[in-house]
Length: 194
Image (cartoon, rainbow, N blue to C red; front, top):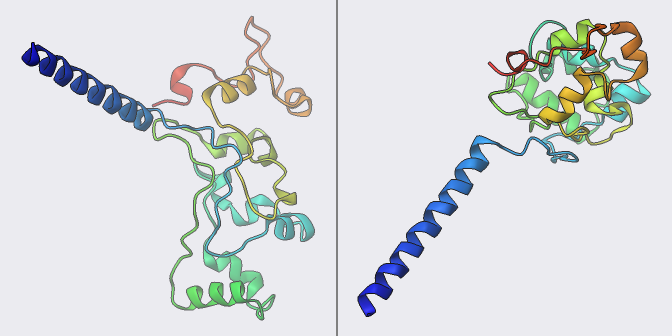
């Protein structure tokens, strides 16, 4: 009787262990893309509210890759130094920026908007057709600390591509196809997954 109890206990422990491992594996295979509200502390306090809002610096000035590649890219320190060679030199964060620039060391920014590895999102295509950065990134010009505004889930993207949640001013420029889907953007799997 004791032997059967131990065997049952061993089987239950093994099943529980396998269950936990499956849950952990699924978590790594399907990461939670919906980090909506995620706003990590950055190595240098950077206010988009000051730069994009008050100073009206356009997104593309700093995030140059958005026009020509898949990634919007974090600006090189040389872009920052275009202004900060003379602006704000008395501030500790600008001094840190200047020191890194002089030592040719990049700032190790913490990524805020991160998609799963299996997702292909070309910034260039979206910029080219006139999708405003705010659609996905929110009202950045009023954010002191940048945060993930949208859930960036597959359903969220598909809703926009189908024109369900696409802003009216963008829809009027894109002229969705007149077929039964009325898609604004492609919704076939390989459009975003490769």
